[in-house]
Image (cartoon, rainbow, N blue to C red):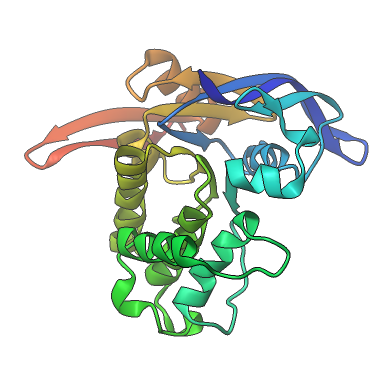
Length: 257
């Protein structure tokens, strides 16, 4: 069963149409990366899925329930969304992660024993137990990104939308975040949809790739599908070389100019 489905979506900003008749299925317990040139609509898809934006036409559903008809708390119990830009709150890592429990709490937002256990597990899963009392602004870029992901993990939604989670991170921190995504998929069965700019990283870590250009879905499939690789070359005007070495495989991109 598909976890998340975009059915014949049309949407844009002002009088500019971005998507017209776009359909896309996201399957469960997989890492699906959305890649494409800037301005092609990657982040807009995630905002539509989390009901930040509403489509002009078409329907978006999660577990066969229409996203737009869910109440905010219901939606947050099914979909966790981490945007590419977020402020650094003046609070500890633990307090930030506790914010993920809000969709599951009553009007007085009291943390019970179950909430606390879920927060502790999220901290442990994301490798943050030793940093739980550290103020968020004092963390490194990679630690801070893991803290925000831990907040989404504590939200305990089966679908996680991560918008450019590796942006502005150094190489080692990027690998930490991508390894964390694999852990969340394998240990917790999360369905992860992520927007990535690093094509090599997307091809190496994803179960499925969605290639977009100018609001159109050029290809969807596994990283080794010829249609996906051809779509990447067409979307970015590059040539891809799949390299195999002693430490594994990687993808090199070359200009077609």
